[in-house]
Length: 450
Ligand SMILES: NC(=O)c1ccc[n+]([C@@H]2O[C@H](COP(=O)([O-])OP(=O)(O)OC[C@H]3O[C@@H](n4cnc5c(N)ncnc54)[C@H](O)[C@@H]3O)[C@@H](O)[C@H]2O)c1
Image (cartoon, rainbow, N blue to C red; front, side, top):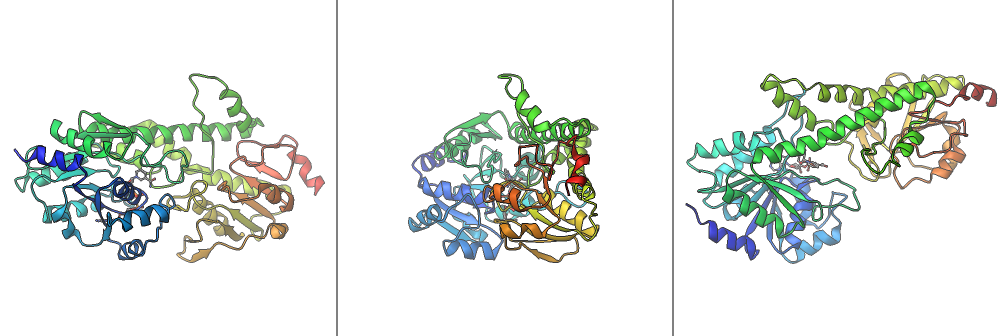
């Protein structure tokens, strides 16, 4: 039996040295929170540019302000590095590396495997390892416990192993790493106890569960729940559009029920590193046990059709003005997958851009947070300057992301034609606004209005 009590004392007294592997949207806020709670933290990332930027005290993550980062660094509590040998001195290490999908939509475990290879090189007794990357149930056991056992290390005896999913919601002003309750499951009772102790020292509420598998599954349940409910409301939006009923007003009416209804809103599709990907991890794992989740597949299918639906809406709106997509000057406002953040990963705005471009639109985009992206041909596209007065130059303005940055009154007054995917223009009386989830019964008259 290892020195469980020694490690417990180190964690409790904050003398434990903690490592965070992967300093992205999840790892960097975690590392800074740990450091500012008093732990010495090594932030380990393979990206030299990110580490160099952090060493200069500059943050690239919207939720980590430089004041917090500098506070952590000035107290010598946060050391960013690309050198994995730092693991030799660590007492605890959390893994926050990406878990994308391969081209064939299967889990890409290479990032976790590579982080585990590095841990194996510098593994020592009494290390507490916590995997945080979202992944299929069984990963902690298959890719860490079994691997380390081959080296003679037994979880709960020579070292400690847990899974604790990250729930951070980038850009959320109310919930952050500290005040979002955290689920944690260890391989043994001792592992769970040490994991709970570490996280309780800087996170308000930690919820222990009986195993890493339950913790892994709980994260996938949460995100699959979101994916399915978003798909449902997206389908209802397309249905209401067909029936000339306003989905937005309908949702508000349904939402007055104080029980049994949870509000989800339609949009141009799903994006980010979580909702489009995580359910596929679960579906993949289920298939290996000969179980096919129809809900997961259907939700993916519906959510993936939303960019086509938005494209058709733009085409319909232009048609009402006797114009086609081909040759029309179109401006997209907002390219990030959700408001007030810069994350373009899997953003449906990219699909809508590509569809419009493929079909001959003369396209521009503006996003105050996401300044460039690569289109389907690999060309780098830059966000244009936004002058509200110049919106009259465009045949159509398409609101993809409802960033708080925008002055929607000005957009409404200067644009000739608008496609609104977020219901920023609630008033249905203005016939130049075409919303998803609603088709104005009087839209036939638009042509006559000019
Ligand atoms: N972004 C979110 O909102 C969110 C929320 C909850 C959970 N998650 C999950 O957290 C995990 C990380 O996501 P993210 O959004 O922070 O990703 P990210 O791409 O923002 O950051 C990952 C970081 O890991 C680094 N990295 C890659 N391979 C590495 C390696 N072998 N060793 C060290 N560093 C390595 C990258 O350079 C990058 O800085 C994923 O599993 C994701 O599903 C993400």
